[in-house]
Image 1 (cartoon, rainbow, N blue to C red):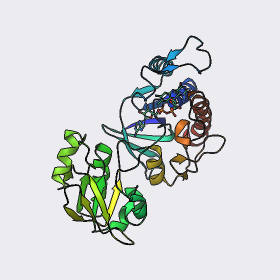
Image 2: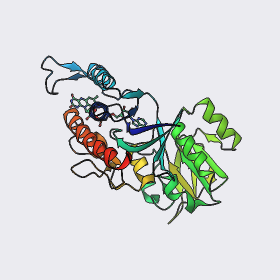
Image 3: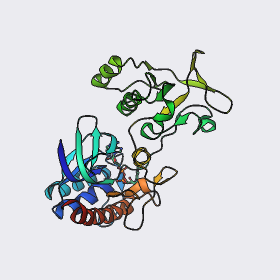
Image 4: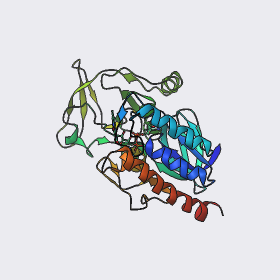
Length: 298
Ligand code: FAD
């Protein structure tokens, strides 16, 4: 397994800015992330130093070139989960690989995931959960659904089989984007993928079941939400990092409450702008550099 001193999750302004600082300080740096939303044909008029207007695409390309120049490795891969292992390091699992690291900067941007399930808030914490490693245990031998259409959902469903063999995936009416490799693993574990939407949650105080759009009902004790890609708040939940709503809580040095884990940019909330994300990335990098020197290079 390849090991890095810092892994930065996110290739947006915050992640790239952080990588410029860490790589330039000779910290072995890996960025995991693909092009952010802003890397398109959007005119950026309010970023310092570009009076002639720069496109989001060019700004990100320049950031990639600069971080690479200082030695940061950049891979377009999606992180599915982060776990703390016995050696005191973090294991970052992606769609394609696994990496070990002593320090992480979360820079995954804002997460706007809300499941398209009527009245899901009513059962939040009473059957609806967002974190397999936090709540999977409470569904031992019970019937659970994972709401998600991609590999993140597939991976959550596979992790749930540690607790119960009664697991299914529901894409909430979306077309599944689960890769062939994951589809095979789901098949081997008897995890069906249901491509229907949910029209009703059944239950009084706690979740008892779901009604699908075609009227069919299924008894379920729990639904784990795992839509799209995993976000910083998903990682935060499984690592015990404090969040406020959809945002990671950090101090002025961009430190979270978990040792060696920092966060920057839109995923921490506040003024969601490039200039702010770039500044926060630099601060997170400075904190990560100190952490690596003091705690990882022993
Ligand atoms: P992002 O830029 O959102 O980057 C997040 C990164 O995390 C991406 O690389 C993504 O692929 C990665 N990621 C997410 N989940 C995972 C995962 N599980 N595994 C691996 N990688 C993951 N701001 C301005 O200042 N000026 C503007 O003119 C402006 N215009 C905008 C126009 C549009 C259309 C949009 C959407 C935003 C605009 N913004 C603008 C806001 C600005 O884009 C954001 O504030 C900024 O990009 C935040 O940077 P970030 O690095 O925190 O997150």
